[in-house]
Image (cartoon, rainbow, N blue to C red; front, side):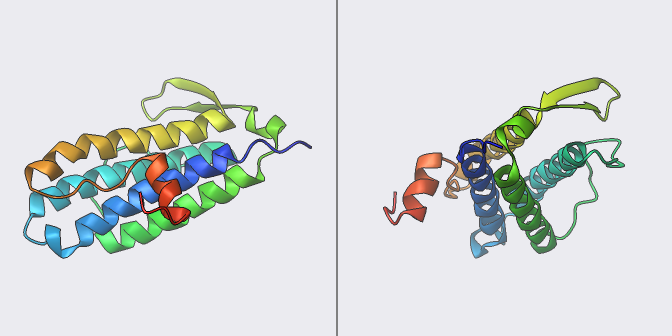
Length: 167
């Protein structure tokens, strides 16, 4: 059984890196006086987490029980951060466990709106990264407007940091 390249693992590590950087910013003293920034960021981070849980269930052939990908009933941010760490760690391990044949297997599922879906396992993992990146990047203008540094989201930044380059 041939393993796929380590790229899927790297992509899931990037997803975790991006999300935890956003959690850390929202939990930092810089955001204590910006409740709207924290509220909006928490909303999108929870949306990302819900979608992750839905697609994890699809990957496992399980029911997820969600009827929507959004919720206003957002858990406390520190708790949500830990759940995101656990979820992303699972995705990293899952990506690392896939053989090339299993990664290219098609998974059929139903979207929360009832529409049918069909993606390969590796497409699902890529979707989870691009979905998270999209929503986190969409939050960036409001961060900049409030003189907050945008958390790192680029692959080169993550790789440089993990390799000691300090990019």
